[in-house]
Image 1 (cartoon, rainbow, N blue to C red):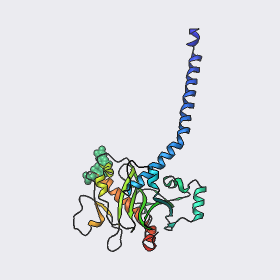
Image 2 (tube, helix red, strand yellow):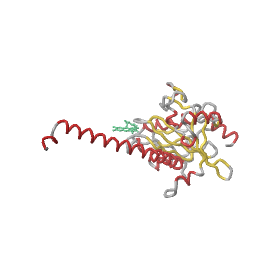
Image 3 (cartoon, rainbow, N blue to C red):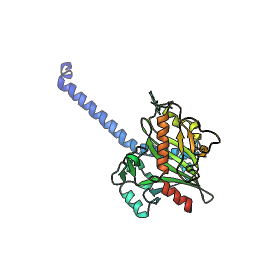
Image 4 (cartoon, rainbow, N blue to C red):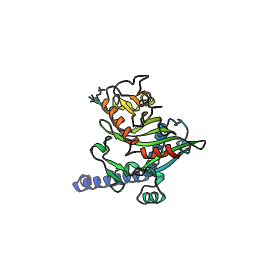
Length: 268
Ligand SMILES: Cc1cc2nc3c(=O)[nH]c(=O)nc-3n(C[C@H](O)[C@H](O)[C@H](O)COP(=O)(O)O)c2cc1C
């Protein structure tokens, strides 16, 4: 009997059955946990949006806090909100407003265009045609505009949000939720003290040119460029340059400039 149990056929049979049981268990867990993963991912995104705008209150339900936020889709080519037809087409193509996945859209050749050389200072390679923007109103007036941004640092593409005041000119906050820059060097983009340096900075200079810039070293207090400059991260000039490039790109002509000009002209 014990000789039978030790036979090659029996060993293989046990190994196959064990693999089968384990794979059923693992794939079952993956399928059943998928909705929870999607929900958590969406909640995390909402948390990052609130955090970039400096509005996140720890310990309070994210869903409740996000009720103050209106999500709109902007056509980056025209700089205006997507039409109902465009929204229906996006939904039919798998990009509904409620779970709009801009990162996936950027990889979709039907909804993004290749960027080359000079057009691509943020090194993102492809630019999506639509972007989700997040608006907060207070007393009927636009209070905050939160825009998604991404671009290359030294080791990775940084993904985050930049928040602007309702004037579409003053920065209210910046935060990244995904990157693999080196902790203590480029990873200092997550340092609250550094992020605080962005608050109150202006996008444009007096001539109307885009002037926001992360410089090497410290900003000189009282200098003409103080309102547009942010201190670079020490020992991480390449990540700092990457952040500067991506912020300028997304606030520039190929990014949200058209949309922001519209807001400046007409309100929401
Ligand atoms: C292991 C290692 C990790 C590094 N990580 C980063 C980084 O995340 N971001 C960055 O800008 N520079 C990083 N650097 C430093 C860059 O190679 C480069 O020296 C630096 O950006 C220059 O900045 P500085 O002119 O402020 O010294 C790293 C260097 C080493 C050796």
